[in-house]
Amino acid sequence: MIPTITAFANSLDQGAGLARDMRVRWALEEVGQPYNTRLVSWEAMKQPTHLASQPFGQIPSYEMGDLILFESGAIVLHVALHNPGLLPEEADARARAITWLFAALNTVEPPIFDMDMAQIIETEKPWYDERLALLKSRIRDRLRVLTAQLAGNDWLEGGFSAGDLMMIAVLRMLHGTELLAEFPAIAAYVARGEARPAFRRAFDAQLADFKASSQAD
Amino acid sequence: MIPTITAFANSLDQGAGLARDMRVRWALEEVGQPYNTRLVSWEAMKQPTHLASQPFGQIPSYEMGDLILFESGAIVLHVALHNPGLLPEEADARARAITWLFAALNTVEPPIFDMDMAQIIETEKPWYDERLALLKSRIRDRLRVLTAQLAGNDWLEGGFSAGDLMMIAVLRMLHGTELLAEFPAIAAYVARGEARPAFRRAFDAQLADFKASSQAD
Image 1 (cartoon, each protein chain N blue to C red):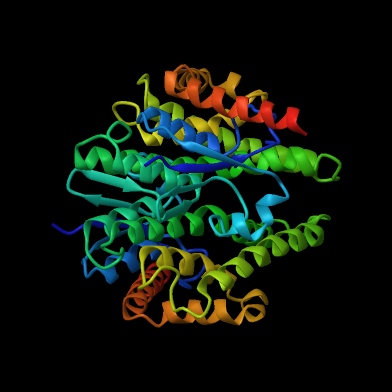
Image 2: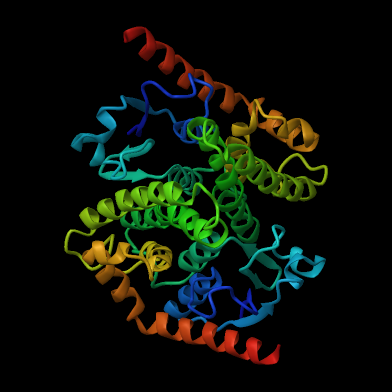
């Protein structure tokens, strides 16, 4: 049985691999699990058929037999818990790797996501400059901590784990800003993740889906 | 061996149980695991001793022998995975309950947290009214989905789970706003969580810690 995931038919990022289905594709590629993809348009995302698998009307979702999951964090963790390759075997190291997955989503992503949103919907607002400076300051605080944590190591917790996968997926949202250049150790960490064959396969697959959807329009 | 958690010595919420150590205390009470508490002042939180267990300088952290964890989501999940009582036994139901834990943290909490922060630091800003309205609209979208999901059931996924624990902990941040009154099914869901004996014990413990710290100042 092969899982089916949902993904954007027309991602706002034009196939740059920033939509959250990329995280799930990458995890599935890392563990060597083939998958089917159901592409969802912006209109279909709010319709009952899709809401049955993703009640908040977002992507991705994950379907495997009777099991339907959503939330990219939950899906990546599910894949990591049920397949070898994305979490250490030793119990304590395993718990620490999962901690980094949560840190990526709950401590590092929020200010990055807020900056991203501000750059989309608030550029014309009178408060934009002030708010952008505040968000960048919060992001720099996180990048300083991550730099210290990496401390010359390739990954956050021993070998590459689901924690690195999620952290790098989040940090990739900084491409195109000056922030990665300010933190060379973080830029190198992101580049190491992007160089992984599983990342490349996932990236190419979502880009191909985007191009096919665009041509069909 | 008993775990030690860190918590605010002087929580900004004055002991209302909104600080993130409350989530960990509640989980430990649900599974009947005694714990020690190390209270951390605002100054101590940014010092090397605390940063060794929580690199981002926040609370809570969790220490059990050589294992040190942080992120309330990671700690609650760790407690739930290693003790009976907070996750269904059946594999698919277990994965769904974990999905709700992620949904609480990554889909429901962000707009609620943003509203909370705006009400603390942005009330004097010229954009405050406009931004508050936008955030409330996003919160209402989430509460509508949760109302449909509960559909008359007591909990999100069968029996009470770590998913409910985290969701209710997040929704409690809406106390004092008009939003819970607008969604009576959500208000009743929160009240069901708050009526649990384990919640009461955790709440009382963190309130006692706050009062003791305040008197010591």
